Length: 119
Image (cartoon, rainbow, N blue to C red; front, side, top):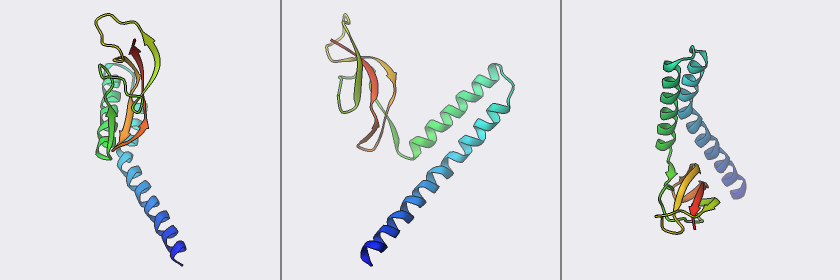
């Protein structure tokens, strides 16, 4: 009985969390649909940038954090080095370029930042 009840509670909690995340993202989906309907031009680009900002803010309120990388000391727990370069005026093992942002949820790394590192 205990195992069955805890499994049920875990499933219910998972469903509740998913529903809350999806509910938070619904306004973003609404704005993306409006962007698809809008005519192209300078205002279109501005609208897409606003939707991107709204998405980032929504995810931030849910606890998503961008992993700092540019100019940071390379950390294999947070960064994934895809290239190395000989860079003048830069300390060795310093991130010189970010190819893809990394994200974390609290202490858990969801995706490491894809970076170029100085030798």
